[in-house]
Every structure is written in structure tokens, then in C-alpha cells.
Length: 303
Image (tube, rainbow, N blue to C red; front, side, top):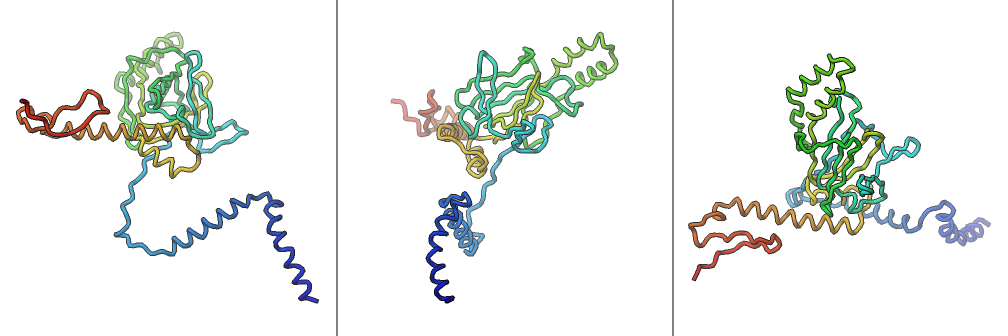
């Protein structure tokens, strides 16, 4: 009797295998893929490598920068917190921020300029009153400046995410801050104008994108991620699988990476003593006017 029941049960195993993923709302393709990945990882871990034969691993430079005091969290719909790539566009001369499900060319920034409002760095909740983003693809700039202040004459400070920023507040600013604390309310507006003029404009250069942006009269939450070079950014995205990147953005990064390689090669060549040796007729010739036609060779002897 048991043998008959066991034989009958075998007939339903195939049906159970086919129906169970559907009942559990699982994708059969993902089940097979995960199984193959798991087996591949086990096989890979069982292999023995000679550390001397392995190629040296190059570090990936990828920075996650909070330009304001932002709590560490991901996307939270209830609190209206968004941690996604933001695409930047211009509408009627104003910058518009639009969250995107994946990285597009409208998200990639080559230069980011920003300036804090009066009170920084003594406040625990710094706000950004000026933001200018130069896009990687078009080299066009989008500006957020609700106060319409003129920042052309402000001192510029280039920021390196991996180094301590130089002291951005000279003695003149410290003196004005002391003056601001001692003046009456009636004269505070005049001191505010003087403080605004001394606020430096910070600059981030490389390939960056905004991942958190909340604003009202000024930007009170701003978070950016990125790298110093297009090559590092592309490598980081390959290993950072939180967001996908579209084909146009990938082609743009490849184009910028090639241009960066050409610039590095040109700078290396110009540093060569023979490059500017005018007395040596067999020296290197000068760079062509068109960077795309740049080449290195021997100068032909004049007839």
C-alpha cells in the first residue's frame, strides 16, 4: 500500500514544481539565475590563486558628499526623502530638479558651484543660497539663485572631497562676525550685506550628480555623489548597482574618458624638455591646432 501511495505522489511532483513558483509569486528565471550564481560562487571560492599572479587592484574613487547636514537614509516616501539621481533642466531661466529612476546624461555634472547663506559655519543647519551646475554633456550651466545675488566677485575655493578644505573665512570675515554679534537689529541688515560679499563660492570639479535635494527659500538638504574623473565614475557605477545607467550616459562617459586621456597625453608631452627645444631641429613638432589631430613625431627637415 505504501508503495502505491509513493508512486502516486511522484506523479504530482512535476505539477508542484511548476505551480509552486506561481503560487509564491516567484519568477522562475530569477530562481534559475540565482541558483547558477550561487553554484558559480562556490566553484570560484574553491579555486586556489597565487597572489603573485593576480593583477594589482586599482582603487575606485567615489565620494558621497553631504553639502548640508543631511541624515543618513535612503528613499523614504512618508517623510518625502528621496535618494535618487536628479536630472537638471532649465525652465524660464530657473533650475529644475527632477528625480530619475536611473542615471541619464541630464544627471551628470562636470562642475558644481555653491555658496552658503549668512551664518555658515556657525549654524548646525547650513543652507545653500546659490547653486550653479555645469552639465557634462552640453557644458551649459543651470543656476539656482532665488535671491538674485551677484557672486561674480566672490572668492572661489576648490573643494577636494578627500582633503580638508582650506580655511575659507579670512580675518575680515571673523571681524565682521564679531561686529554682527554686537550691532543692534537696525544695523544688522547692513552687516548681512557685508557678510554675504565675503562668503566664498565652493567648487567641485569632476563628474557628479545630485541624489538628494530639498529646498524652500533656500536649499536645506543637498547631497551629491561622484568622482574626480569620468573613468573613475564609470568604474564606480559598474560596481555600484543601486541605479542603472542609460546608453546615452554611458557613451558620454566614454567620450569624456577619451578626451581626458588625450589631455593627459598632451600635458605629459608638453612637460618633455625636447618639446620646446627650438634649437634641436630633430626635436618634437608642436601640437596641431585641432586637438583631435594631435600627434607626436619627428619634425621634417626644411628644404
